[in-house]
Amino acid sequence: MAKTNNIAILTDFSLYDNYNGVMEGVIRNFNKDAKISYLSGNVKKFNLTSAAYLLYTGYRFFPKRTVFLVVVDPGVGTERDPIAAKTKNYYFVGPDNGILYPAIMDDGILEIRIISNPKLFLSNQISRTFHGRDIFAISAALISVGVQLDVFGNRKDERDLVPYNIKFFKRDRCGIIAKVIYVDNFGNVALNIHKSEINLIDDKIVRIKTRNGEYNARVVKTFGDGKENELIIYSNGFGFIEIGINKGSAHDILKTSEGDEVCLEGFTQGDFNHSI
Image (cartoon, rainbow, N blue to C red; front, side, top):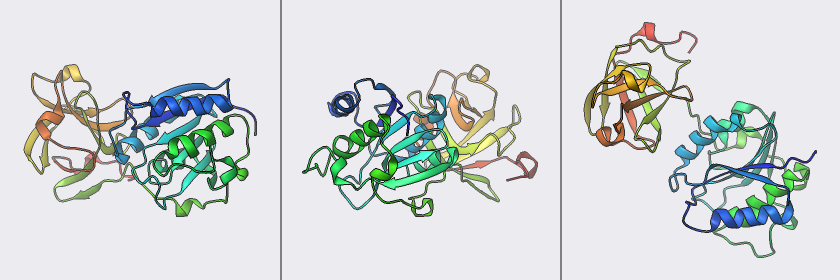
């Protein structure tokens, strides 16, 4: 396997502690030429849905053969597998807890290995709470310098991965039952519906039902089409259907978080892509 120096990090470690920095240090000890960048070092804590969304929507914008070091791992130290995956264009290292699944399935899996070879761990006594340093960072570094995946451990069948389908929603008499998959820093609420699955018709009024209340929203093309304090629905920068407010926070009104169900009324049969 040829050397690749690009490593992209995605963690929920925040910007305040030294965990991200320590992982960078481990990487540079094994690859002084590493080009380290961040997809995000500040994912919402323990939030697997957010992590899966950020990785899925972001990975394809990085150079081919980038190694993604993904550590959002509330199950650290438990029986969940640490894995290294090679896809058609990239490498991914992280816990098998669903966060890698949408991205690696999307790019096309070529090989998955369970990281179990103790000779590759950072030390003989690895921490039960910091696998990001002791297992994942060093694995990403070794891949970046050309170490073959078969050295890391046994193969894992993709059918045995912990699944997470980022684009699955339900249709019933109410219209659509969707899930919130991401709430960004502006308070925009992304749903697990892709623009390829539904036709958004300008000015259509959609009734939004959440566990906290019912609201009307209008379909628009962009934020500036929204009126003051008006809930709007549009396709976001990654192609997912999103609820927002022009210069405001939809989250402050809807009070929804990742994983919450949202019912959208007002869509008819003709609004759906018939291939779905």
